[in-house]
Amino acid sequence: MTADPVLRAVGLTRVHGHGDNAITAVDGVDLDIPTGQMLAVTGPSGCGKSTLLRLLGGLDRPDEGEVWLGGRRIDLLGERALARLRRRTVGFVHQDFQLMDELTAAENVELPALLAGDAPRTARGRAAALLDRVGMADRDRHLPSELSGGQRQRVAIARALVNTPLVVFADEPTGNLDTAATHDILRLFADLRAAGQTLVLVTHDERVAATADRVVSLRDGVSAGDTPLVVGGSRLGGLLGWER
Ligand SMILES: Nc1ncnc2c1ncn2[C@@H]1O[C@H](COP(=O)(O)OP(=O)(O)OP(=O)(O)O)[C@@H](O)[C@H]1O
Image (cartoon, rainbow, N blue to C red; front, top):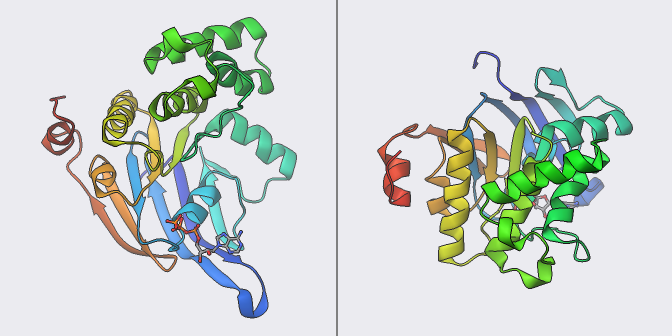
């Protein structure tokens, strides 16, 4: 067991459906994720990766087991308390970006800060700084429809960061991107990790998994392997073509 993990799962189990249609998507998973770790969850289609991610991020509740985030048990919280905690401590990045079509890039990033109670000016300032950080400062007034896939994903990452979450979760964040855009997003995740951000990614792309500190493989909802990779070293630098 890791000392003081930022995220901990104990005996996590989630069954979808009922009776004959019941599927145990996640089956007794234990996981400790220390602050600053970049963890990749891999495995074949349907093995439970997304379900596990949603449980860890408080978007879904386990049928059995516990989820601890920032030292707090979250699976027993009521809906409102969980939503409030999620807003402040969790950032989510989806494969299909899930930006609001009618809002500009800047407004998309500001929105979670406003919902969390920040003053409009504060939210605007935070959004501007984050769009700059992800290389999108010059596109802040564009609508999502006016951006490429990679640019949309960068906006989605800025949005995930706006409330300085304890953990950023990403579900196949490069699944809809071409090679060049994938490379940009991986570089951005590597920068976040270097800045101490804890990241949990779901991917079936081995190139993406290879940029993580640690890879957990799932098979039929069960952890089938847990591989620590070289941390902060040549493996990541070599893959991205740059030295840390
Ligand atoms: N809401 C749901 N209702 C019923 N079954 C579900 C639901 N969500 C997921 N499942 C089932 O649970 C299992 C795990 O699904 P999950 O989406 O977590 O897998 P995954 O590894 O992320 O798959 P993929 O790589 O294809 O996205 C699958 O058999 C899936 O069909």
